[in-house]
Image 1 (tube, one colour):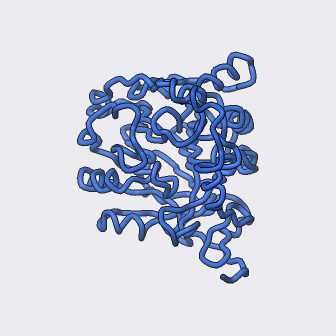
Image 2: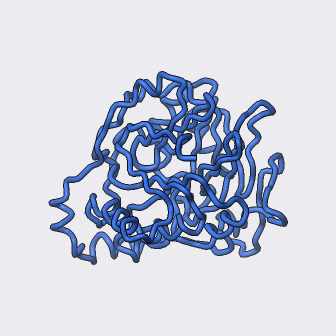
Image 3: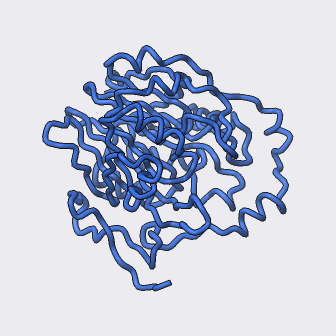
Length: 339
């Protein structure tokens, strides 16, 4: 593999960070910022076969799952709101425009939903923009993409560099717009929103031979009037939060991952624990935070109820400066009333 770096962006899109050269690649792999990050199978082996989970009994006894309420009425309306579907899947409606993030609507091998979806998958229609942060299977599900493509012929996918071939292998007619970090998507002259693809500290793999061949990232949505909603994607705590705050902060609403953090030797380069999530929320000077990436799938060693409990303790202790909203799955959050 060549060690000579190259830099990539979508030349058709605006880059909003001054002097940003594009996403660094070494050979065929995207770097995690400046550095090449390659998770090791040795750590997976160590976790699965050589390490005893000290919370094993506690985890087994912890059957907590998020409460679920039906959101079908909201989906069939044109009312603005924000709804958590579980894990990193949200429906956001802004001025009649409907966006959907990282939908995983079904259980699959190794990914069993611990709670129901708050609607029928068939009710996810009239989606204008599908935002896909990265290619991991708990964020990009082939069956979900195929269903949504069939049901939403007008839907545009906003995603990362090198994602289009992967998606068109699932749904050949999908309209896909790829962006690098710090780029603004072209939504057309009439769009009431601005959407930017921003950094995350993570990596890509779906198969044996595709390590880091598709970029990963986060999204910032600037709404009419200038209010901002930030979807952090999958990320560890890293310097991109300071950079995002400098470019766009303070942020109004942040959707921040809080789960899948134990054992740290396996997870700390991929995910934020609740303390790190609170720190990242504070760094971007968020006014409101909605936690995600917990409770839906069993991905790690911590008990199911621990992430939210810890975050609520952090907030109660005054260490979280944003207002915390921890909704039921399917609960309609009136984001416009928070601003």
